[in-house]
Length: 398
Ligand code: APR
Ligand code: PHB
Image 1 (tube, rainbow, N blue to C red):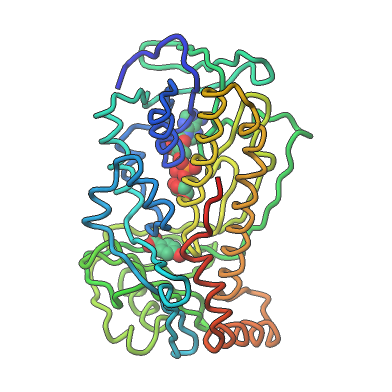
Image 2 (image 1 turned 90 degrees about the vertical axis):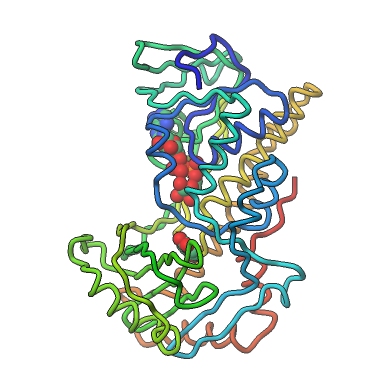
């Protein structure tokens, strides 16, 4: 990790979250010279608690990049999941519905540790605590980035800039108004998430639709549970004691799962709003957007990290072709190709949110539609196959 950057690189990446770090490794693999500029400290980036379900393409990417040893050892491979409504759970068997399909439970913070450790070993240049990062010259062939480090003002010249700086980053706002379009849904509730050092109440994930609202039983390991409750956007973390959380969680998750809950002190508790958001196109001039900088999904289905990984696989392939052959076809096609998959994941996350949550304005008809759709899933192999292929992740066509 260098303190001061080189004067010139081929690609400058803004943001060292999953999108930025996967891209840095992919460009290193393609022998493309890159630098990563990150606003926060490395500890901050690694310790953020986020979702923990990896699609097969994401696990395959980790293996391809030589980052797969720990996920192979410690990741929990799940061949199915359970949907529960009115205390009547049913199982969706991925493997039976989509041959060989599974997801891997492995926390985003573990993915970040693996990315960062290998980045050190490979001497990837990642500058942390880079303040006031600003892209310039995006509509020219010679863009550059300025920022401020502890040593003072810095500059790097480059050929392309990739905004991997998340929803609140600086990159998306550099696209002039009128050159991109935003598509958005907000949801009238949030998710209260809890981490506790207790064994999970089921060996796989359980998504519960209860009349009080949604609940999700997930995990990080055989001894660490990650549980969620749909909550009001007005709720504050202080409103939810551990006891209140466990009581409500048991009611919503229901029946045999409730009986298998082990209660314990939570060591992380947070509330997150839910949002669907796409800014298109994902390119303007010499700027590309990837991951949360371009799109947000509600957490239902855990697609955020996987979409970020898929974006940068498409982009790295396009840049590799550009530098190997001089053809701009890949980079010109990046936005359309990435968005084709993004929209399908947006649809799935939006649909699963509607299927499993209580909306404030819901009337009897809306509720019956939810129940009918859940019953259709329970009784139809075709419906379950559609759920399964989306849940485990649609194929990535490069
Ligand atoms: N300058 C430099 N870095 C910035 C700036 C900025 N102005 N603004 C934000 N960043 C950094 C953030 O500190 C963060 O480390 O960009 C990174 C963006 O990371 P994420 O928000 O994790 O986004 P992304 O890499 O696209 O990952 C998407 O991972 O974090 C989850 O919820 C997210 O599941 C989604 C997936
Ligand atoms: C998680 O473990 O954090 C998780 C799992 C599945 C989801 C969302 C979050 O759908």
